[in-house]
Length: 472
Image 1: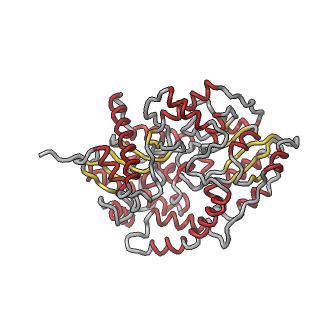
Image 2: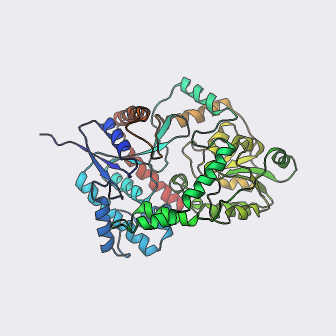
């Protein structure tokens, strides 16, 4: 009798059925699914129990079993929980989770692991330890291209398929329009106001709510509850934080007033995996501090058009907007202003990993980033240090546009990944989206196996090593 192979899945309470449906589709109904989570209610591998026991027995002075000290430092820096607790406590959490994950991998011996893209030290350690054992780690993340998703652990670019000239033509026709907006962005000023009030109202009870959740036996060290409690406390306010910004004729006048050149700096969601884990430039991790330092460093040289992320209006730490507004070379723009309008007004666009950088590069605008975002190849973007000199002019090059589009499409796959906890097996459309993803993942696995590739886990290890080296 043949023993069924095991696929390990990282789950949270709101996506168990979704991830199981995907895994069974990709690897077949006969595969054994092992579910791991820091949430005991859905943890079938005793990860949470092993972690709590290991934490009690771990000293802050202990050494990692498998991680180098450089890797341990990088995992700590990028995790929104570990970097915000005392060093001794952070060390114990890291080493305890390393031991618990080691035990899970020993017990399950999986052929592969399916996960969300990394957004915590828990998932980061799973990816690293899977790579040590040659276990393929597949992280899932939505794409800003409609009806597509990406395979990526730490945001790294993964060439996933071949693309045709017709696909390039179709994507180019969609993305090059002046009013293009990704699906995940709220689409009108009215929706932005509603989103602002929704974020504020939802955040009001969160510090107390998650503190109470952590009082439940076995949940005190739960990553999700603890990190959510800390972030909610950081952004808590008695009233929504409004952003006063210019638009219309006032904005047009700024571009014609003869002052220093304009750089468009769209704010990104933070803390977020797209900054914490996707950026090779770790200065961005202390996001608000880095933005302020950047603006101040270039007083008298450049003026920065600052626009809030439409989905995050008002959800910043106390005083951030007022500190930005106090900077003489900082121009706050109303969130309703389309991003492409600001691209047109600016000499250049400065991003961490935000997709506004791709949209600007597509139009030939100079884009500055030291973060190596996945949507650009080496040489497509300028270093942030280019602000110390002049910037090249905007040049729209059809051949370059096609090359950028082709690179992007090779790194995404057809299928819609619903990553907001609303997926339901009872919804035929949701199942259809999953089935499309299943076909895409299977074709990707056949492609890399046919090429003799080491698998996504090996790529993850290389990405993490290179990120760590660049951040030192």
